[in-house]
Length: 143
Ligand code: SF4
Image 1 (tube, rainbow, N blue to C red):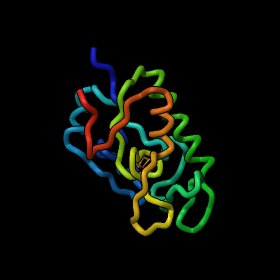
Image 2: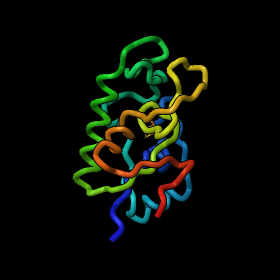
Image 3: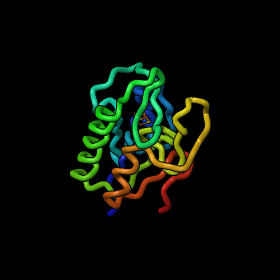
C-alpha cells in the first residue's frame, strides 16, 4: 500500500509563503484533493503571521532580513510538522525547494542575495533524520 505523502502547503495552493503567496503545483493540488497527501506549513504551525519577514539559514540559525534570530519558532513549527508526519505514517515528502524550512538539497546562503548553497531546510532535515524520503517539487520522489 502506498502511504500518505507530506507536501508543503504552499505547493498545494495555500497562500502561506512569507509574502502571502502560494507556489501551486497542479499535480500536488490533485494529490491533496484525492486524499493522497497531507499539506503542512511548519511556519504556520509555529504561529507565525502571513505575510512575515523573509528568513534564511545562516550558520545553523534562522535569521530574518532585519537580523532577528527566529530559530526557536521555526524549529518549533518544524517539530510539529514532523510529529504530524510520524503519526500519519508518512514515508515520503515533497517540499518547496530552496526554503529555509522546506528546502532539500539546496537552500539560500543567508545573505539574501539569491545565492544557493548545499543544505536542507530545518523541516526537511528533521524528516530525513527520521528516515522519511524528501524531495522537492523540482525533483519528485522516485516511485
Ligand atoms: Fe511553503 Fe514550507 Fe515555506 Fe510553509 S514553510 S510557506 S510550506 S516553503
